[in-house]
Length: 435
Image 1 (cartoon, one colour):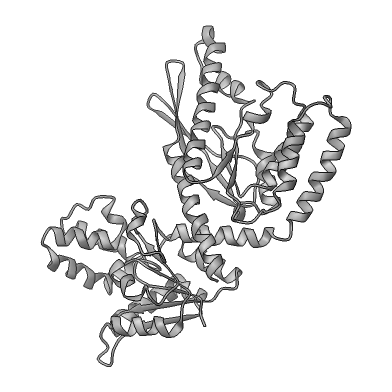
Image 2 (cartoon, rainbow, N blue to C red):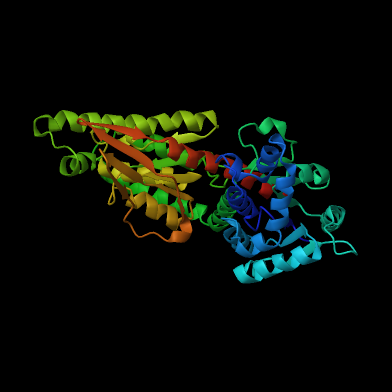
């Protein structure tokens, strides 16, 4: 019995983008929001009373369009992760015999066929497309999870599948969906959920080792700490030891970002007003801290706790906390977090230790770089530490806009990375419960 089933069009093959390209050649202007979903594309043409053109486009995407199409971003990675998780997966699609031949050629060309346990195209004795046969095939295979991009079809199978992911669905108005149907922006949401499950599996056998390391380091810190009355390390240590659940269900996020190097960064790179360097450095630092702390509200609204190290051990505001205490405190928080987000405004930063911890202990690591804007000049920065790419999720960039000695931090895109994590985390929990 296969556990996860995939539709073909819109899930494995990017037929939605092919539809958009064909529509543009026919003279249509397709809004970006509509271009991301086959359901929204259909409503768009029906709303214009151009159903005939929509049917022509659909006919083309199953033949010539299939030859020109690319695979959906995230599908290959998802299938590889399912293989690593030892979860079987089938592709079930309703296409006519001729259209199915194009589909099989596509799967061979992209080598995606190698990752499916079974590939089934459903057509009747007249070699015509048969949705009824597809429905029957799905029922016979008793899938636990199915991915499809058409809500009209999902409604026909929702009573037979414990969990259905609606690709290109409405992730804002989730209340309109049945309890067993989850909308996702794209297949990359599913990929991220599988990645979280994979890392959780890697991490399960490590946590006792984590606790032993923390206990040993704590004993050393207490022996050599400069201030024996300092409760900082005691409080963090107690919280860590009390919370032995390091599974994907942990709703704590550790936010790693540089603060101690910010002054050097802005002094050497961007502040040309020599008379007001000190004040501008302070303003820059406060603006960055404010932007980071605004992310706490987003996390709280989604029932996540965001740990900001500078609120507990920033050497500027907490000079009484020793370097050793900060080190063990950060370590204990990192290994007990469900994920680590790295927010870095320039290439070489002080976030390397936490990033390496994430890799060593199989903690999901999200890295968000920046785009610096000064007038008409743009420059992108990336983290320069060496980290295994398998353990990094490259998040969205944020913008730093310098103007008249001040800096504005635009974290809207970074928030989208957080939101994707929230969605994927929820999906991962649902998948784990079902499988």
